[in-house]
Amino acid sequence: MNAQTFTPSPGASPTMSAEVVSTEAIDRVWSGHSVRFALVTTKTDIVIGYYDANRQLTVARRRKTGGGWTYQKLDTWNDWDSHNYIAIAEDPAGRLHVAANMHSSPMTMFVSDTSGAVRTLKRVPVLVDEALERAATYPIFLRDRAGRLIFKYRNGSSGNGDEIYDVLDAETGKWARLTAAPLVDGEGQRNAYFMGPVIGPDNWFHIAWVWRETPMAETNHDLSYAKSPDLIHWFKADGTPLPLPIKLKDAEIVDPVPERGGMINNNTLLGFDEQGRPTITYHKFDSAGNTQIYLARYLGKASKTGWERAQISQWTNYRWDFSGGGSLKSEIFVGGAQPIGGGLLKVPVIRLGQSIDFIVRSSDLSLVEARPVLSLADQLKKTVKTPDDMQVNIVNVEGDHGEIYALVWNARPPHRDLPAADIPDPTTLLFMTLRSQAR
Image (tube, rainbow, N blue to C red; front, top):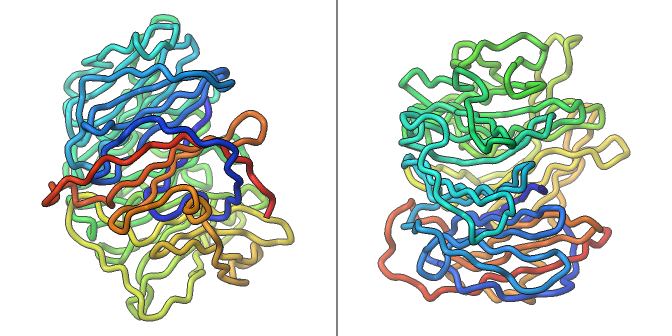
């Protein structure tokens, strides 16, 4: 099943250039605040998950070859919380798993029978351990190298949470803990916000994260990294084993950014250079107090420094001075570095709605140019008219033959997870088939 990407901002896949092949309306959907919908593909079908005009979780499925959608309404409703995103996966036996509408709340999971039909979806109240599933957030499905379905989530709350991994026995349909201990332990004082795991060119899993002391966004600190061959045994970049659960004192600190240092959670993106070395894109304040984009890269065991860090933006008189709790209206989104040939790396960034490709030399991470580009959202503005108080949201996956599938809808930005003074009219959820064009 293909993975999805989501950009809850005026942009998606910043350098993607695509032509719209077809557009179809799916439903009228909630637009009072942005929350991530789901779009995945199986060998034969397309599956989507969204909150309808009444905020009710809805799952729909159809063949890739076309035809009508089969819809199913599920018994959970979103409120004003932008954390309550939707995750969907198909297991090796054909069951559909849908996790959604959770922010430090009881596990909300629905599972179909082995036909995968959406109308067979039923709520599963407990996966493994009810005590660990009373305060779940950030559901993510992934697969290990054996193809087993893995489900990870945070147990606890912001400033006090643990990362839990469960594994599915596809024959029995039963979940079990992948590891006896959580991946990390905040020791009752903090929690970790992860990006990943992602599979690198070395076929290992790589993760980057920040630690956060309280529910307040400004208390993020200490950019960290780990890697694993199997999601069970974890190591530092140089191969030093990490005992589970990983605690702050044992973690590999890539950049010791202090609290209130301008680094935010969920904006530390992994990439890899042409040699397969892990890189992390993130932002923090520079010595003058301006917000800047940084790139960190592991140089290998032979290096005396281990990780090198470089500032790749040169902004002046700009400071994203975020603070407080709840879902923020983000000003910056970063992407992972990727090699583009000629000894260069491309680092995609969106700042204040403008998509930028930072081109840096792989030899020393020095900046070559900061190139404004049109985002996919910019290109779709001819098709999707967006009200002034809303933003366009895009979830996209790659198809089997070079096509791109995308869910596109308008909604207001996150509102700190608090009610607004009014409720806007629903907007139309569109399903688009796109054809990527060379740039």
